[in-house]
Image (cartoon, rainbow, N blue to C red; front, side):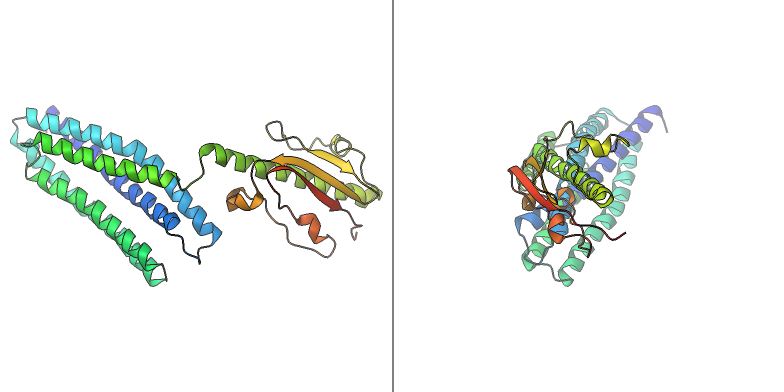
Length: 304
């Protein structure tokens, strides 16, 4: 294998790897988009979050690998047109047919997963759309490379460019549409901040309850509970909180939130503690509204 052929082999292999990564994760993104675009009343929160995560990872992979595929494919075709070595085209055919076999098996696995979802009770509309997506994506790739193995695109440069432009336009359209169904990065950060500030308040509440259990009185300030061990979480980037004693056994923890608690994805939603006999259930209610919000709390003596 001469240097020219070796270079082509690496470029062609990189092109095909980029292609199948793009196809696989484009289908992941498309399935997530379909799940959010056509919601099922039986979907749990975790299923909706999984769909949103599928869009995120699919978007990230396609944005990286599809342009890489386009660039490498263009380089491969330019080298093929400039080469007069017959082994060059022969090597290309071997790589293409081998990749079509491997890639076809992987994409058929996606189709099996789609059918399994239908048999497990998925909406018929979702099943049909996902099956259509698999056939369209797979068919487009197979059509291009079967023609490529025949040397079709080498003789029709303009047709190849038009095919790439149409495909890219459709992919971008799906990406943009899918993005409208997931929170923006800024919103996700706000959700994380809301969750973290509740984690801080939960820690403060537990320390207040411990302080009351040991001293039978509420602390005057939060700081006096954390001075000795310095365990107060760092909330320098979060909304400020206030602690107010109302009487001997009740107090308030207040802060400002970006979103209502019921708007948050489960992964960003404050965890709800299970009720115990020694703890009032209302002390574990961390539901809140956007804006300034106060949690009313009441302590009780714990059983030692």
